[in-house]
Image 1 (cartoon, helix red, strand yellow):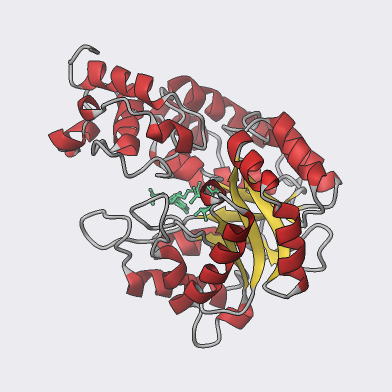
Image 2 (image 1 turned 90 degrees about the vertical axis):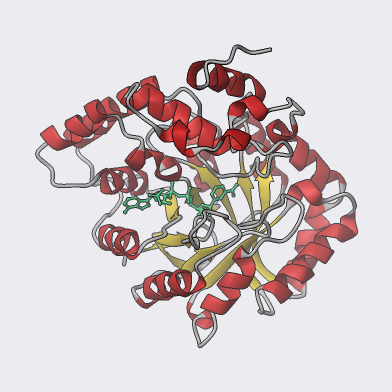
Length: 385
Ligand SMILES: NC(=O)c1ccc[n+]([C@@H]2O[C@H](COP(=O)([O-])OP(=O)(O)OC[C@H]3O[C@@H](n4cnc5c(N)ncnc54)[C@H](OP(=O)(O)O)[C@@H]3O)[C@@H](O)[C@H]2O)c1
């Protein structure tokens, strides 16, 4: 495992972090039913092999955007038996639930209990966009963070971000953050904070952690065959996952790349890659190959969905990420693709009642209602009302 210095903190962090948003599930696919034995095995294997950064959040693996999910309690179990002392633990304050200053203390204290620890190493204000930023700023987020650092409940303060570059810079400059988390991968170079945001934060001494380095797995599972062929013809023996992660680590400003791994094969492969990839190693030729793949991938994507499930559960029962995955797969793999058939009728796009709740929660800013109409028209042959 390779390590990098984490911005202005004195910490040395593993370049691969364990992202706990996509842990293995029990049969049935309910994201609140984690396969605990397997998840604990994966997390501990990663730590035994050098990973020293574990990232979770209040709502991960839950069935609601307003209640604590099963993610934090699972991480608490995984970090028993001496593992807690070996890692930097990161979790996130649900910014969208903050209605008054005291809410921030309330959630942090609850999270310390759920994680069975007396401190969080890296505490993030979760999913900042214009609305959530206004919400926490007006409720005194700076005073809250100062006091939580002072009394030792958190060691370092940061934020995770899903909005435009201008707002990103404004937030970076507002507080003496130690770190931040941005979405970054070869398809999203110029999306949200992007490369310019990455450099801006790093220049100001923030350690930068990366979420969705493989676009939630889409740069592996939804790679069009023309794009795969470019990798195959390149002469390099690398999987799409290795290509994707190498691209992110190639940036010296990136410190921790979080990966939401859910099988031992993924954990082993990513650890192997993280043991050999320094920054600035990719040649012009390799970067060109990735550029070509990116162009094919971006041209085929119908919806910019990463499957993070922040929009779920839908009050009308629509499986929103499933519908979009089917839509993209149809565009990428053609008419023979039967992803949509695996979604039962009560969870299909035509059940959307257009309440719009999902759109306020989507980190990618997708016009979900309108895109679901496209899905409905294309895959159910039902015209929009
Ligand atoms: N703060 C926020 O707002 C926010 C938002 C999103 C994520 N996050 C954090 O960032 C972490 C990382 O994001 P992410 O989970 O979206 O990461 P990601 O690496 O983009 O996607 C993870 C998925 O990629 C696939 N994958 C990973 N390694 C692979 C390998 N070696 N071979 C084949 N497939 C591989 C798997 O997909 P399959 O299992 O489908 O094959 C896996 O579930 C999250 O887990 C979470 O902790 C934070």
